[in-house]
Length: 325
Image (cartoon, rainbow, N blue to C red):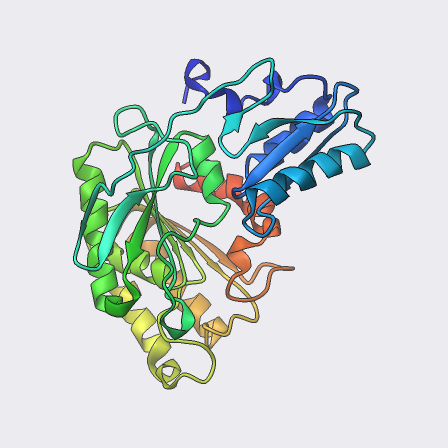
């Protein structure tokens, strides 16, 4: 994304009154999930909040209180969700189509309206997010991609979801839907295509490595397909993972995998790490974040510490730059 095309929302230099500390914190704010709000005061104070009980009004109030708590006088909102709302410089941002780009029985390829949108010809690429399969058959369709996706969106990638009906979301069918969605994004002309996901969505993204050229990069966060601790399927989980690895044929695809200590969906962590390592000669490059310190549990990829530590380096890795992960 060139500077001329950069939405006002993403230009930290435009933020008035605050110093470099406030602008640096604004850049951290841009990695937060929605609802989110950034407030400031003409005396140089600022404060922000994000995802307060998924309540925009509560998030706005928290941001204003945080600004006031740091000495702000007459704090007002500068940015909210995807828009600059500062009274002296309101700036709308582009929004995605309201309808799915593709789909079929039990699945849909959906542009996510909580992210900036440019379209296939203008975007730097497409970032496709696949959700996990929730326990008890709960419906995960519409769930917000993990915050590290913001780094890709802020860099110019359109963010789309692969929504799957839990009633038909079996492992092989989920992988087939991932392949169809990636083919659709290629056909629409995106310059780069990133396949990403968490848990079962990550497993589906790895399964799509069985043919070259489907994705330029895969980001698999806590891949799993065999249920939590106590599941009888854990007995063959490592064998199934090795099957996914040995069928990979993706010499131009860069693959990042993140696993976490204490993940109840990941039996035999050391065996899994060894299996993932075998992807290296079958792909263009492998980044294995194996049980990073301070991050625990199946959902650790959504932790703010994961975002701040790894979002930028995942983007660098996916695009072939030297990664600082």
